Amino acid sequence: MIQYKKVAFYTLGCKLNFSETSTIARSFEDAGYAKVSFDDTPDIFVINTCSVTENADKKCVQLVKKAKKVNPESFIVIIGCYAQLKPEEIAQIYGVNMVLGANEKFDIVNHIEQLDSTEEVTVAYGKIKQVEDFKPSFSYGDRTRSFLKIQDGCDYFCTFCTIPLARGKSRNSTIAETVHEAEKVAATEVKEIVLTGVNIGDFGQGEEEDFFGLIKELDKVKGIERFRISSIEPNLLSNEIIDFCLKDSAHFVPHFHIPLQSGSDELLKKMRRKYLSATYTNRVEQIKSIAPDACIGVDVIVGFPGETEEAFMETYNYLNELNISYLHVFTYSERANTTANKMGDVVPMHVRKERSKMLRILSEKKKRAFYESQVGKTGTVLWESQNDNGYINGFTENYIKVKHPYDESLENKLQTVKYLSIDKDGLMFAELVEEQVVV
Image (cartoon, rainbow, N blue to C red; front, side, top):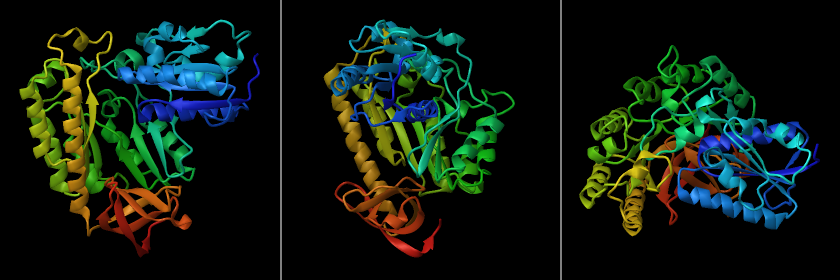
């Protein structure tokens, strides 16, 4: 057994990765390791990777170099989606000592402690089609919120996406087991749980249990003030889910993040999405008809093969007219072993960047308009546990980021506030409604 004392973690990518990194970090702490920061001369670096874009792959290489500068004698482990997709390629990166696949990463402590030597690079991964186990995870460390992994994998195989190749088929625990994980979080100081996964609306995969049944049970968990849905496909966001969250739920907040990817039905078909724009419009209208102040975020991909100027403007105009609150804009990136990578009509990179810039500007306009529509109204903020240049920040139920002069007594409290104005950075100034401290 090789003796190590200090371990540091770095996470690339999505909220799901953050929940898994946190769970893996706790397994190290349970084994007697000290969790330290990346710059605190760790003995072990664990880098949890993403592979949605080429930049995420490049970032992994940069982090390995940085780790070796911090501690040239360190032991470096690469896990995550990139590790499952290209383990042998990663093993060739100078400085990497171990590469673990989708299932193997959860047994990382044993893999390290069973080593007799660090001279050879250890590579352990299985075929993703054979991965059937679901490993529950939740993040802990931020006192205010936790990312709870409720589902993993995806059966959709969109033409641009490597996630099914990296994470396998859609799978989850039972509702009872998932509620038990939420109760573990509720036993901490955490006030808000963000439900995360690859395709969370597919919970249950159409069998006896489903996502709607899950959220109804989670809503009963005592000790959690808020549940937030991280992202859900429009074809899986049923009216009964919308109605429950906005009308009947005690704890689910009026904030939905719904991937669109394109406003062009022709491109949606080429992407092999499970809906057309009419379905998306229907979901937005349904949400806003019940809760006009609800926040709606959108994922959109720019520069997909065959995206003509007309198709891009169709997306731009569609989003411009849609009653949404902000965009997450992704510049299309060619990924190996995807159908889209074999398509013709490649959009030049400079055009992709130009279009991305246009949509990011549109996102700022949408967000500004949404914030302005809230000025003079009240909301409930969950204050975060940090002093940000003399201010305390937090998010409201409908995802408005609020700032107020720092007051330590507010940390990790839910507080009713009145929205006053928007600052130069796009945050909402608010005043406390003193008699309305919730918890």
